[in-house]
Length: 323
Image: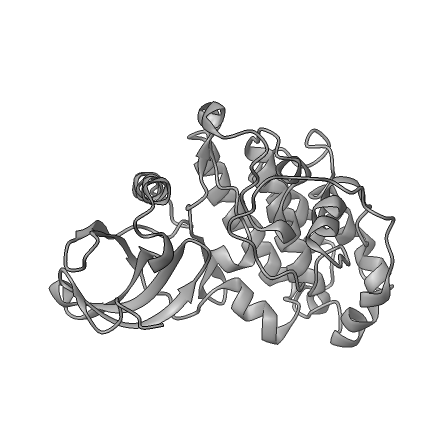
């Protein structure tokens, strides 16, 4: 399909190539001619939904929320607007271009991170989420693809496209579930009203994946994926690798408790739990991955108790179900 955005100008921005996309939006690398030809990223609604009033309203909401948040570990919005160069007015927002890509792009080819690298993520994303939560904002889509890698020890939370204020929940149609199934909290998978602890569960899954190179379930379908979050016990890190430190396993499993009252209650608590566990490791173990690729592959056969079959509403967007 012909791309109507690439190789055109949007205000002072010269758009180059597509660098990312999801169920709702596309992101392009561009040059800001008003700021010394610096590189930026421009996010626009996907062509298929550009004229949909509901998605346009959601995109405006994302711009409003993201522009309001000012935190060192949240990717800032540099500019936003509406361009009338196409048949349909084009809503866009401009962010810094991050050459390091996303955490997902790091984990996919390289496998598990070191405990020290994971601790940086726990501390920084915990601080970013606590800041957003202080405004009663629930992100609803915390996952590696929405964590930008600024450098080896600095990260930024991005993509507030599914953000929701706690006091706005009455506006949501009952039964509709939005988010990425592999990283959903149990309450999100059920379609329940959410609070900040849903994001903390998703963050727990991200940290689990950082340390083990995989997620704690072996689902075969979307229904099994959602059911696993709700009812199935997670595969423990020491099931994957018997030598995995027990002290580090404790906060990993505490972060993904099924009952929201039983898990960490803030990003600061998650960071403190991981910080204490990493401090107990030797210098060598802090700075090396603790799970091998062979152990990751061997864990694919591990079984878990069957998840309860559930029926839920629409899913948008849906990630690929590969771990």
